[in-house]
Amino acid sequence: MKSLIERHPAVRETERNALVLRLERNQKDVDRFRDQLTSYLYEPKTPGLFERREGLRDGLEDMTRTNTEIIASLREKKRLVDSYLESARRQLAKFILLHGSMEEYVMGVMVTQRALEQTS
Image: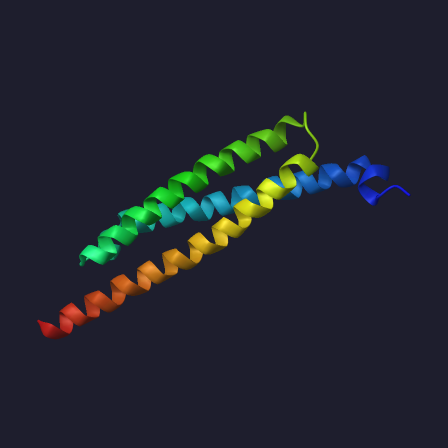
């Protein structure tokens, strides 16, 4: 018995388009995170925060590179969606982790700034 995707090529195309759209939306968030990291409001005040910021920058660069590669591959339409489906899922999982790390960094900066303001 054939699967739904094997019977209906339009389903495969829809899935491909949905993955591309999701990765493009995630890339916009990655760009927003990068802007946050360069904002003076989130300037690190401690050595630990400086290290976390550098790790986040590296993660954002890796995310951008991988997003671009997967999106380009999906748009080429030369290969089946199945070959990129697992890559896209891993990429989305990495994005969720990166998003959590970014939130932790922002909270760390805010807590440090409040502590510095209270001691002044």
